[in-house]
Image 1: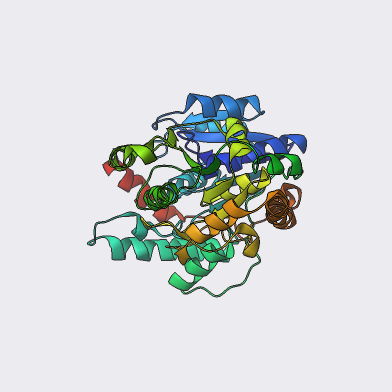
Image 2 (image 1 turned 90 degrees about the horizontal axis):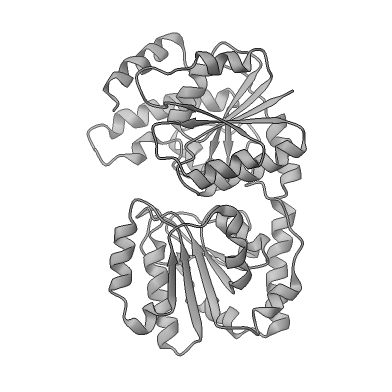
Length: 396
């Protein structure tokens, strides 16, 4: 049986974790064995672990960063199996190489879910080491790309990576987020024009400035309340910057804060109830397509800004799930939805959903994942592995 391995943290619900959950469901239906190799040194999200196990995946815990890996049992487990190993980070890539470096029947795939996912230098504020990290990233990325070991989440990620590392395009290697497409629910969409306040929903990790748009969304919502609209705002998510969001909400006047609900964490499978009551979704990444899949119209938002600036509705550019900074204020788009009658609103939501079905079907994308093969199987050479082993001596 072909085995599919995901190397992930399982420490929090997010876009990568929801992608893994959807892929597990699809892979199990295809009679494939799914294993998650997770970092035992990070905090473990019990709900998330329980969910992936209940779906049919097995979990093996190892240390991603410590000096020594306990990999003997993991390596034996795979023996001579054909394996697709998918990772989302450099620590995961190093671990994948440590497990599978001598196996030619394994395809290692770095799935790049972020414009800067392959750029080590972007993730540090230490200017002294940025040039070194950029050079290291360039060397590794060039090899991965030439070996056909990278899948990009969208063309925006691919363009930025190839441009920054001066690489020539040579592969069709963009695979959009695979989604289990639901039937469009016109009755549910229609009911939202008749029941309760107009609800704005956003879901994200509280990591700023990456997801700083939440601050601008609160300001946008405040303007809507002050203009007399019957609106509510639901924020779902937690993260390393929860305190900053708390501070922002405390500064909001009571007339506005009374209409805002912040829920720190909701398991992926329980998001349905929030999508069912949402009139419009504002956010970025996976949750945009999740919302559209639940018959909610969506406005993708830019990243790395504390303003709530976006683009257009999902159907205008379905591949854009939120670029850098955003292009325009979106309050007029929200007002446009608010003013729609039932028929207009249903057709607007249907248009978003049709584009989702056309571009994100897991049946098509999942098969492309499984047919993705490396042209070469090497990630690091023996000297580089020695350097990595030495560097781990200084990692806590």
